[in-house]
Structure formats: C-alpha cells, structure tokens
Picture 1 (cartoon, rainbow, N blue to C red):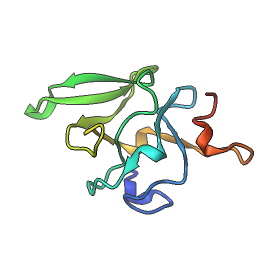
Picture 2: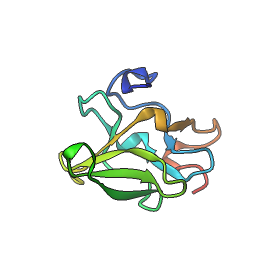
Picture 3: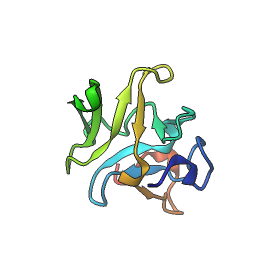
Picture 4: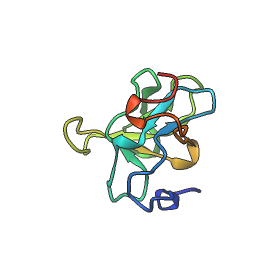
Length: 118
C-alpha cells in the first residue's frame, strides 16, 4: 500500500504534483495546495478541488459511524473525512494515496491558473 511517506516531497509535506484524481477520466478530486501536515501518515486535505468531484456517504463499518469520501464519477472509495482539520474548513479529508493518480502541471501552465481543464 502506498502511504504518504512515498510522496516525492516527503511525508506530510505539500506534494509538488498539483492535481490529484481518483481515475484518469475523473475530474480533479484534490489539489496539493489543500494538503496539510496532519501527522497521521495519510495524505490529508482541507477540502476537495471541487465539491462536484467527490461524494460523501455514511460509512457504518467497523462499528464506527464515519463519513466516507468516494469519487462522484466512478464511486471508488477514496478515504474518509473528519471534523478535526485546520481552519477555515475544519475538515480533514484523509485519503488513501493508492486510490489516487497524480497529474503534474504541464510546463507551459501556471499552477495558479487552477486545475487543468478549468
């Protein structure tokens, strides 16, 4: 299983890859500028790249009631969201990195322009 420590930037650091997708044809799920050091060992984001990219569902497994995050397009499980993240969202999207693919910014594109295709 690929953990956050496998990121080229090191554990809990902002990954240099700006766009993170659940699948090749899916819309951007998360952006590296929303990643923060949660000290959990998993990639954590304060918000999704777009609310339209992910769906939140109740997860009643493991005798716990949690909120799981799935790709809105394919329904693939991405991780869970918790209410202990940084301000202003107070959300920690704890995402399984092996469920994600990383898309670098093309050399001729400024990362501040937003995700590719926007």
